Length: 355
Image (cartoon, rainbow, N blue to C red; front, side, top):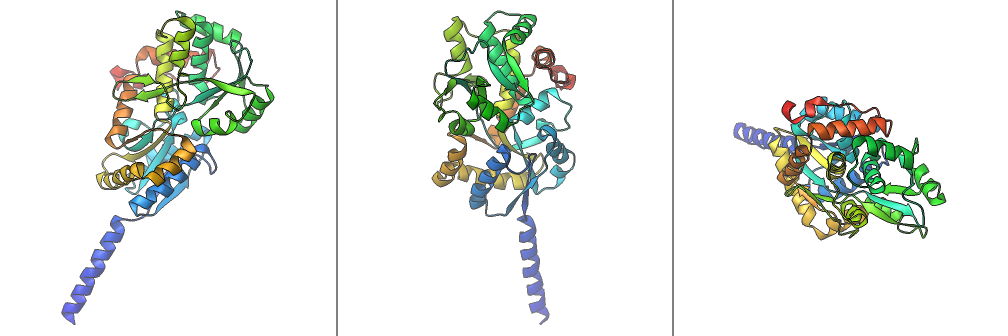
């Protein structure tokens, strides 16, 4: 009996250890239920669970501009070895120009999806005088419109003045309100991710493609055309109109903000120093990304875009950080403040010499 009790105790301990090692995984999402990133996360969780074999639960922590949830994870929840976080492109923009607590350098990438934002326009509208719903998340669109309308070789002062004279930047609209306004023709331009573009812009017989921002190659650090919308990349459209490549200090600020917004459009992070969970989830992510059924389910929502998993996601993050220069950050904050009326903050701690 004594030996039997010892054996049973040993078996029980092994089972308890295994259960603890593969306990429930929590995914913190900074949006409320029903938001775009929430829907994306739910799809990924469903497919990832098939390949991970562990229970994954979603914890929504919504707040202003989706910042409080990530701050909560950064300051507290990331130290729980079974808790990870999802971020989106707007968080990347906030990282550049707001006093947030979170810092991507403190995390390891589980995987990120390098997406694109697509610009639609009303057919026949004068897009040198666009009417556009302005939000803090639409900063890259504002930069692109300024260059597309005002042309090359302008100073910061000239771009700010030209934007103010030619773009009607309408504030305070929700996503639903701006889509209805676009359908009515009250707005002549609209911005959407690939999935919502397919729903709201493509079927509209009065709308058409304007341009997109391209996709960042983390190896070369260059933006390339989106094969889902070939020939419409901003840089291609600009050169066709003006005969030269976009360049200069204003363009550098545009590249900075669009790279952080779109290169981090959908990303999953884990705290550094948690290799056991990281390795398990990364392995499951790789299986998911090569499973035809999972790929089809994800592409049905997002379109066909590449995953950057594990170290490849870290490389994307590291490439993005190279775009942060003192001049680019100063010009981003200046344009946001003077042209768009945003309360942007100059984060000197992000200057290369201070990192």
